[in-house]
Amino acid sequence: EQKQQREQLNMSIRDSSGWRDLAAFVETNGAQMDAENAVSILQRLSFRPTRNYQRDAPSSNAAAFARPAADAGAAAEYDRLLSTLLGWVLVLMPTFRPRQVAACLSCLAKLELWNVEVVQALVDTSVRQMSAFEPSDLGTMMRAFLQLNYAPSQAFIDEFMTRSIKKLPWMTAMELGRVASGIASLGAVPTPEWAATFWSASANKVADLTDVSSGDVLMAVAYFAQAGVQPPQEWVDTFFGSYIAAAPEPGASAPEGAAAQAPARPPRYGSPRPGQPKVQTINKLLYTLSNLTCKPKPQWFAAITAIWKRQFGYCSPSDFGNISLYLGRYLQVPVPADVSAALIREALKPPQRMGADDLAAIAYLCAISQYQGTEKEIDDLVFLIKSKLEECNITSLEMVYNALPGLGSGYRLNETVTEAANRYNDLLALQQGQAGTEVAPEAVSA
Image (cartoon, rainbow, N blue to C red; front, side, top):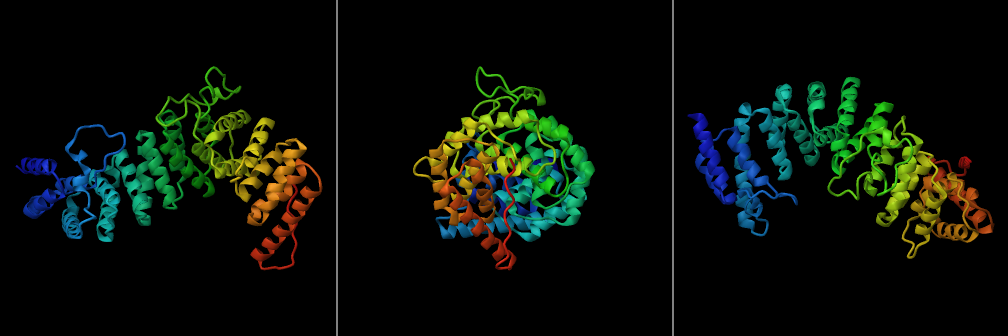
């Protein structure tokens, strides 16, 4: 009888044509609702069709269930509906099952509805039921915390880390990314056992990664490394190798040894083509590597540099600067002469939109690559850097000081190097509160 009543109520919820129908339903049937009914209403209110949503469902009319911001009176009624509904959620909380807990948190996040009492009750319930959560629910819950900008208690984190270990291998690539990025955002440090299981699970899912899920994993791994939890070489070779496993260009063969590092990834929506990550992904790959002890083989860097060069037309000024910074200063990876020449051309291209820090990073990368450019292009680059030197941060000033002597010589170049050193010392003294103490930057290595 209870099951039949629940199904009848759910049918009424599904048949509703807008939020006013749901408000009337809650007012009339609130006392008969169970946890599933309450969550179903929240899901109707929070549903927003995605770009790829194609199913012909009643909930596709999302506007009818959204908050009517243009009408103050209607908006107040809508808010009363949410307030009443959250009251029933609290009443029904003892009967909530794991999937309903995760779904409720997700709905609150989508609605941008912050209620500390409800969220805390959901978290407390999840701690008691953690062992019963499905892998997908763990990912949903972590994503909701990120969207709510909420940090649960240490008790939750401890229980989550303990109970999720055995479920990591069963998670999809998307769920692994959500869980890992959620742990990183909470500032939690994985245990060795959790980390080992995560390395194995994520390596097994490289073929299923999307731009979003791979970005989540990369940013989480960078945080784990900063916290002292480094991935093994095998994981680095497999995960990073998956980005260059397919041929870089149609008809071209992959660099020697690159294809053996990991299985090829299939084509996916939004990728330029198989084996060619987007500029944003290249940024994340190199940023993460700058935090890792283990690195891919030299062939990997050669391949990713070639992929980057083919996408120069899609790079913003900061993309050129950031990728040059990671390759040059942090990873000390030289690039071929044609890449250095192309970078300088981009830097000099009118209307010369690159910032001072971007120019410094490019100059540094060209210097460690031992690039021998023409006298004119180097002089033009030096002139441009000198004109923006006062905008450089202390790291960029050090790079200018170290890089320019390796690119050429001449009065303007020497003058720029001297000015960079003076500005560096002034900024360093200001930071240390020790005016007048000169510290010469470390020379660039040949």
